[in-house]
Image 1 (cartoon, one colour):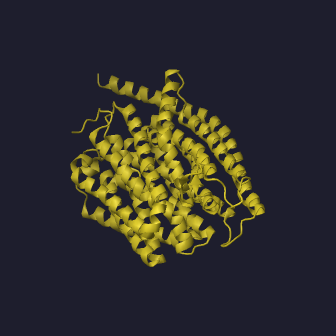
Image 2 (cartoon, helix red, strand yellow):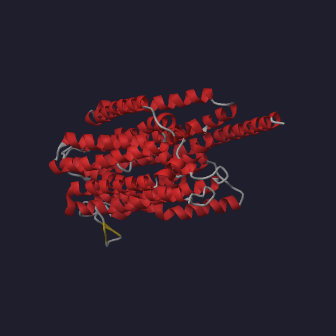
Image 3 (tube, helix red, strand yellow):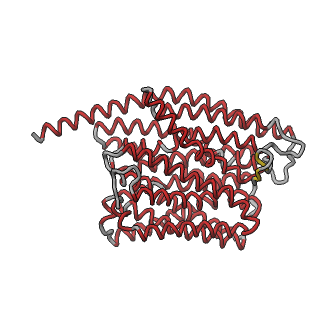
Length: 502
């Protein structure tokens, strides 16, 4: 049943279905949380922004730890299986918390979801990568792109529909649906267990000692307690997230010193790419912080004058555009390669920064077109997301694949987790900076406030993106040289190994 040389091996198709279910459950919940905390739990705008930033950051920053645990102790498939079980419980408890407006229970529920994301985020990519043979890496890259597009389809569906469904099911009903979607993934894991184990790492195929399980449970309790503390103490919690991210990067630097000469150069290229990622995903982090608050306060309720939209559903524009633009971007890459031009990952990031500059420039410009009803047309937000989604799509599906190919296999899950660490650090930074546009409750939005608070903020982001495009182009040459040197040393080492066997 499993053909590792196929374009889409059987288990890869199951993993892609899993990605759709996860995307629908997680992002459908995510899109509701801003208004849930703002209006149901009566958080201020500043605290809500920080909560969303922390929720977006906690899972990714712990994913490096989760990847390390999967690599060394419990296995990649076990990490996914356990993580998705906890997701299912977390969404269900969030539904219970919403039904009674219980703040501690709601915080505990999203702490569980954050922990589950941290434990399981990197391992699906490892499983997907292992489902392809060593000689079928081009298909693996295509599989990553399709996986990313399917994730966006699930994300769009739930981000658009869940806010409308609140009127009929309330918040708790949507959270229970998310729990149900995650339970379907657990059924898939049970039914196709032996195939998942086959594409897991070596640890998945052997028993784990009771001592290891005891340490894992104890560590999980500590980690869950830390996550809960972060959500309950947002001002101090952000420093813990900064520290954890810094520790993950320092550990990667330590592993560089232990790697072979060829991998040292490649991993240095990955390290520079991580810092570029942190800056780029700062813009991604704006979508569910500053952009979301702006849309909730000012966005109209129709697209193109006739398609209904809830303001909190503005985040659905991102996966919609990513899904629509996925195939055209792949076509453009193929066309460029046929013309003999294959831009490096950092060069693609530079192009992405240019599109981000356009997106935030448009967002700033939209503040000058507030209608008599005190709203801007939803079309402005739609086109802002077009350019920001194009920027994300240029690099989003490729960063993980690039890192996977550049590091030793024993570090694969942890290294992919570093990409998530970048997402986490940039997300919490985006939240901290976004609080500058937070307004007091019941603040009347005058033209002066809109111009002085929103317009200046978005225009400044656009200018910073232009600067980063130039810096990234300069760094791309450095990264290309490091990778080329690493590949040359790898060929030399391979030649020496062949000579030694004769």
